[in-house]
Image 1 (spheres, rainbow, N blue to C red):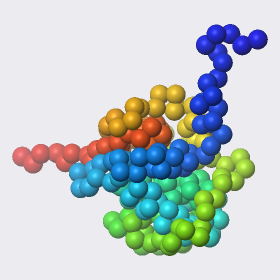
Image 2 (cartoon, rainbow, N blue to C red):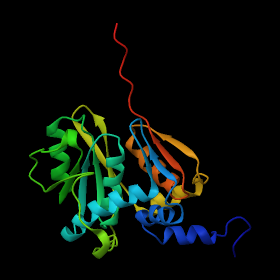
Image 3 (cartoon, rainbow, N blue to C red):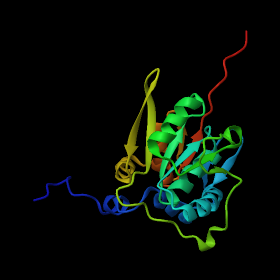
Image 4 (cartoon, rainbow, N blue to C red):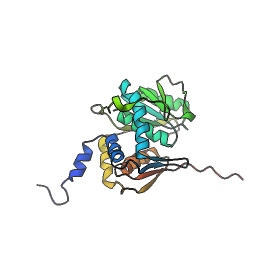
Length: 225
């Protein structure tokens, strides 16, 4: 017996059957000219963000990676990198550029990354894994279809600091992200997102699942006295 209000809605069931990238791709197909992402420097439409993600993903798909690190500050390039990893069927591991290099290396070892995506400010790390520059590296995605996630893989692994010398990684599954879509925003709604990675990842897909605009907020430098 299913009580009133307890029956899963059909759209919820369909969402949970898809991987995280497909939620974005569906909106990009439905409203390509809408603004998907806005920062202080630029405004990026769904079509433009999808093109950036797919070009970078086309390179990653050939590697068939399991886990890919993302070492970049908050920017459209970082968002395109995240989408590229998910389109390649891999698990994204966001890395904080502000963390000491020794901590980043520890995460690389713990997660056994197959590749690393960076922005210009964090390129050439010398961490010993293949590196790709978001917004620059890529290939024609026409002949490289999206790769489905590996069985049992997560959408991303989020690391947070639990002490001065210890970081903890928390896996976030595609189902976890699907559950967050129950609070998806309205079409065209503007959603600000800050530097907290756990909040940002959820906000991205809650926004993009319905064609909203993600507004990337940069930290404000303290005033000089």
